[in-house]
Length: 246
Length: 246
Image (cartoon, rainbow over all chains, first blue to last red; front, side, top):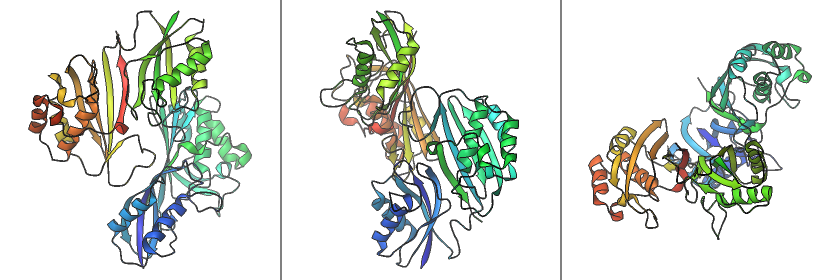
């Protein structure tokens, strides 16, 4: 068996999410089907993050084990040929040690959340960003975001379906960067709770609209109660950017 | 009659181009249909540029005349409401003088051509950029591009269907800007010949691949012969950025 690490880009719009589902298409199933066709083996693909329906990947990391002899380059080319027309692309493929695990070896995960502030509907970006019809105060959002950085009980920002053992996580970075009518929120942590990034972004948007202050965001965090959540941003704007490994 | 100037964004993928066609959907027809529904009038929309099938608009300018009393803001909102689900959005709408003409008053047109250099297929960008499977030497492309800047006979870079009176045009800017595996070519001129930007980009890509030198590009220009054209880039990567007026 040889273990291969993949770097995967995908458009989340047509998928029920990363994880294999009985009731619809998933990124995992698309890659597994392609890998099975190439190798004749029953292959399971493991990812750094199991993104939700409609969430995109620019540099998702994943791994799979193959018994048949094949070079990383040939495997990547064959996967890309068989993934068409699904909007999933293998950007890189390398051989890794047998104990390298896309999920469990991961030291940090990096997300970007993209917002477009304008009244007009989105055209080519529909489903690729969250449209907010008002201007947002990016400086106020960035300032407020810093109350979430560090080690906290993030229960307020956690979905009811979250399977994490603990709501305590360490958020390493939450930066708000604006240019014209585009605004991005960059979030980095070893791991996130289910819906954590979208929930944090939803509350930051309230700050940007002037409906919440930095203190309101702090109070919501301190409440450690999902009922204190201001708003959960839609999946459209969320991108898994990259993952770090030892 | 009141004349309104529009700023229009559109995703060119589902359209036969800007111009109304008998055999398929067009951006012009989509806006005219919406305007007719709002006003009950038979309205013609004129644009700064009649982009080809698959070419996109980020800030196309257009105008239309309306007899019914309506504010620019209400007209914009009503157009956007009726344009759905077509990927066309009115970003701005203003009242202009009766002699303001989106096409004939235009002093300069600005295009961007987007290239992604990688072997893997595009996912969310499919149809929104030209994928070139090799690395391109952006510095060599930018250097060669400067031989095209200025007043020249651009017959080499002109489609057989071009309706321009003269092949002599003045190219004000042709800049190649790269960042990672993304490369953009920015082109500005008072007006362009049909297929001129795509034809210039196709030849610049040959320079970027090392197949053509700056001198080869100069020779192709000097030939003033369509047969000397190296390559016509696909419409996917072309965006009408904006237009300038007095």
